[in-house]
Image (cartoon, rainbow over all chains, first blue to last red; front, side, top):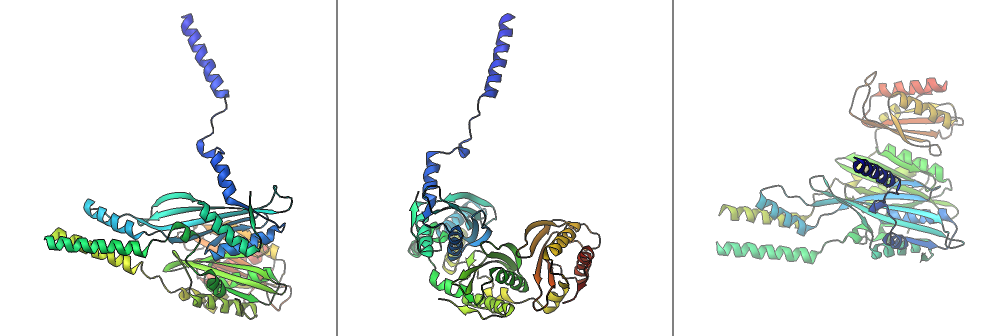
Length: 178
Length: 144
Length: 147
């Protein structure tokens, strides 16, 4: 009887302790080494304090790239754009059609993709005078039946390099890495 | 039967060859529109107007888009851009930006897409700028 | 034999799809035809005041009276964008959803005068716009005049 009582108390105590312990952060929300590397790749600093000029040039580059502006806010240095493009891969279409034929069902393949860009300018804390520009890319791929197939961040070093090269050209300034 | 199968397989192989030769546009190329000539596009998507009033120009752009039957979906005077859409069997979305050009002009740049295609035909842009120029009572100057 | 013919057809169709690409969309120029002058006149009124903020406030209230929710507004641009998911059928007919845009701008060549343009998607009935302008006018204590 005493033993049972002690066990129950012990379990209550452990439960109370567990409640007080800090809960582990889900993987998605944790700042990892990889996310710091991403931030470095996504950011360049331009030697100018004229944030408005950087934002205007960024807006011009977005239009050059065929993006439509969904949101802009000068006070926050924010630009959000998107564009719809084809996601059709002919080989995938043929392959999925053949598969569907064998399974006697309708073929399903990637049809279009919504590409999104989010750009933020900030007065640089690193450099005494400078404006930092951070850009991220995402896409949502839709199937021919209207359903979403995947949602992913796009971000190879090549993509960022090409983007910042265009922004440098528009600004007549070179973008330095963090 | 064998002859028929062989013929089909040859056609199929030829098809795959065509696909691989034709090539797929990479995600990076689609993301950054690397396959379009941006200088050329920029020249027919842009016009300069002899005014320094950015807000008035933006407002006129908004009225013009409405006159053309577009629904305005976003607008902000700080960055100076307006986005609108119109449904006419397909969905067109257009963004028009207004920025100072030098000391005496405003540069108006429009880019649009229909469904999942960038519009790279100069004619619709000419029609837009013609309507805008009328509304502004100013001439739309071409830019390089 | 039938299966072979079917596979044959599928392969041929696949090649046609690949080689000819997607269906051609409508011509872009078709999107840039102006709306009629009559529609213009139905949707616009002149108010003898240059107080755009007051006009915008009145417009916002009238939109909300009609169950619209304001999504975006910018006073610098004289722009209000609103949407509603369901009409409450009081005086108006009942489509499934509607978006409304209001633009307020100075009348050129007329000092102390502003023009208000209301545009409700898919709504072309003059009486509906008349009703809205009457309410804005009431709220402002300024008469709404035709263009």
